[in-house]
Image 1 (cartoon, rainbow, N blue to C red):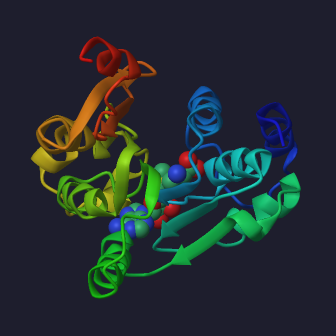
Image 2: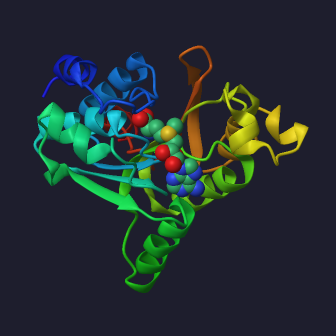
Image 3: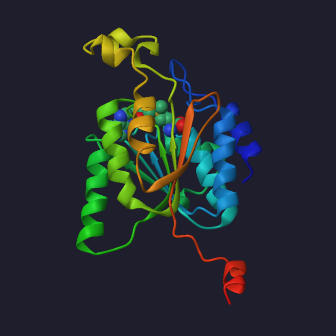
Length: 236
Ligand SMILES: C[S@@+](CC[C@H](N)C(=O)[O-])C[C@H]1O[C@@H](n2cnc3c(N)ncnc32)[C@H](O)[C@@H]1O
């Protein structure tokens, strides 16, 4: 399914009355760019840390459907009600076969501990070639999330960090949700800290870029460079 159709159908979605939420939690242009990245780079195994209501999951699954292969594992603490990823996928008309929904009240770091354990015990290779980190938006869980996802990412995998320009005090009702946090926690761009101090410092990553008004941080896990054909010819 093309991305215009996905976005058009998401816009047409009528949530139940009295539901005060907003399904678009990423700018549409970011959703388009993720969709295109998946198609252009041939990414098939995708991980979304923080499902929200599932709008971006729809964009990712549409790209996988277009490719005819692949799987999105999307992880959240909650399977939100009444609006959630399954509701939106069905509304848009996307096949659920490309989607693996994980709702784990302990959060994605505990979920990734299970994946790492399996990888270690069964001596399997890394699984994912794309990860969007868009969940807790706090230094401690998300610095750890990047550390845990790294061994699950294949060489050449793309890592996207959302909300580098966000701080908790920007939440309209921050007193209700984060009133017990310190001023330092409330007024720090915590995802920017994760990106600058953890992702960009990691020796296994490269291709660091910020886009969409410095909201999104990109990184790519290094892949062994193939010796070029020309280099071989010249060295003969
Ligand atoms: C901004 S929303 C995700 C938006 C979604 N990626 C999209 O583009 O539509 C953040 C979500 O992360 C979830 N979340 C927060 N902390 C989490 C954690 N430690 N583990 C799993 N999910 C978490 C929240 O429940 C919320 O649904």
